Image 1 (tube, protein in one colour):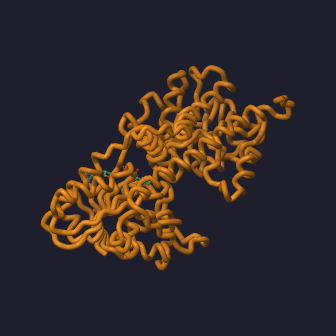
Image 2 (cartoon, protein in one colour):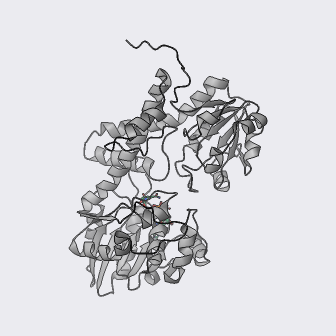
Image 3 (cartoon, helix red, strand yellow):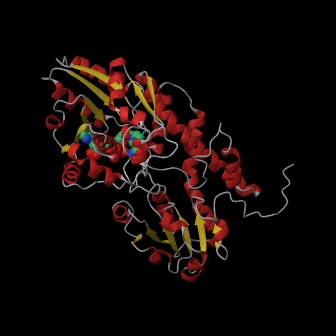
Length: 457
Ligand SMILES: NC(=O)c1ccc[n+]([C@@H]2O[C@H](COP(=O)([O-])OP(=O)(O)OC[C@H]3O[C@@H](n4cnc5c(N)ncnc54)[C@H](O)[C@@H]3O)[C@@H](O)[C@H]2O)c1
């Protein structure tokens, strides 16, 4: 099929490159000329494990352009995958989406034939209907069908999530569903040969294709992110309770996670969620609820817990070393999670700013994002490419992102290089048992109270 993808961010590139890898002819369009130039030169503007290999294999079927007219030529299916960032009031900013829709309509004006216009961006309920209104009022010769195809990929694993998803959700009429079923057929039935760097998981037998109405598809995306955010805030609240009663949240999580009704994922306590999706999507759902006069109490609590949780690491640090003024603090990891170069709404940003505001000397390291971080964090931060430079003579190390290289840190090494071997693990990612000889503090590990008797009744 001939496919166009508008927007070459994490979602647009994952979609475009994967579909080209599966044999479709794909035109990728973006208004960011720099990105398109890089892609034309065969370079990726984002870091994602396994994407380079897929890009290389898909190249013969890929074309990049800043021009809608050039990019939309003869497309059977057009995907919208532009950003929908949050406005200051939490509402999703749809200006990029509607600008892309209007440009698309202008290009379809003199065309005959059938096109399916598919929205992949995360948008409020009713957006597909608004797109349809714009299409209808343009009185096109061609027949355009609108579909909603929310994206559930997770940064750091976009290749795997795109090639081996558990489900593909499509909202739209029969025709849209039929076309998208055909487009995604190799993924639904897993009939393609896997790329070497991203092999098919043994458990993947195929993807469930779920067809619904556009409103349910749109809301399902927010529901999924809000639910996952809720799991994170829930386990963080449990960690805070564990800290006070001397229980171990990792054991509590293991026990409840074995229950298939609960599931074990997203139950790792720590400094909370960040990134380009959970914070904005939870706020957007809260905004949607407000506009329909619905008081979504649970969601408000999820957001509030998460906002507070990132500062718990500073409280823990203060409890150990008192004033932070003039003290060298090592910050390990800046991206909102490992495997991505994305710093959008990363917890590291407010944490570093809070450390600075208390007068700490902040040394930061990240394996991927140090140069990007220079443009975002204050200039008083010490940006280091070498991990040894941040750990040397530090009074404490804060683990913010669980990059693999931090997980292999040895207690003896920390003891030999740090002024005080105090390690606060913001992701409960290290194995506390291997940290003998250092002061290792996690979230809700039950080690601060020890065996003191608790009298709650
Ligand atoms: N990043 C994720 O993990 C993820 C996961 C699921 C869903 N989503 C949703 O998918 C959408 C895209 O997210 P992303 O992370 O890929 O965004 P992104 O910011 O990485 O990329 C968006 C791209 O759209 C381009 N763009 C903006 N306006 C345009 C226009 N009018 N025409 C052409 N290109 C335009 C931008 O230049 C940018 O390259 C958002 O709605 C997001 O909520 C993201």
